[in-house]
Length: 155
Image (cartoon, one colour):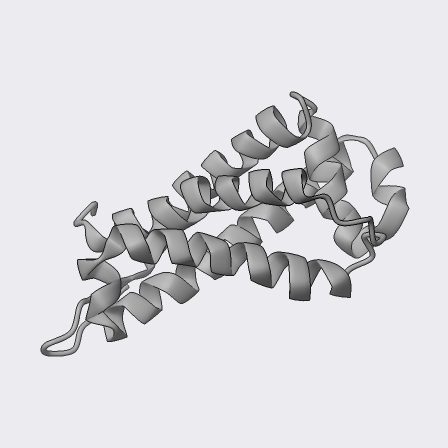
């Protein structure tokens, strides 16, 4: 699906899906490696617990798959928003490094201050080290890949 306007960048759903796959995979792997110490199931059960509560930790592979689907849906949402914005705001593509860093920090802010508090995930005390690590992961695995790939012709 391609929609084009004169003097503006084109928007491609196929490109959005490819960027989602790349950024979502990078973010998921980083969460498994750096945040959950190689506990793949635990990461995605935790994500599933956002909508299913604590039962997500006892539901086995079904909950892991629900968490994985939810993870990629969230990655898709953030990718879609950025790529669409980049068709309207040329600076996002021209300054993709700064845009990617700022977008990763925006994603951290939205996730931690808006989305997660609205879920069934219980509130936990704030830890600066964990927050910084999480922000770094989102900058390098979500913000920068989305901004870089949006600025490039990949399809």
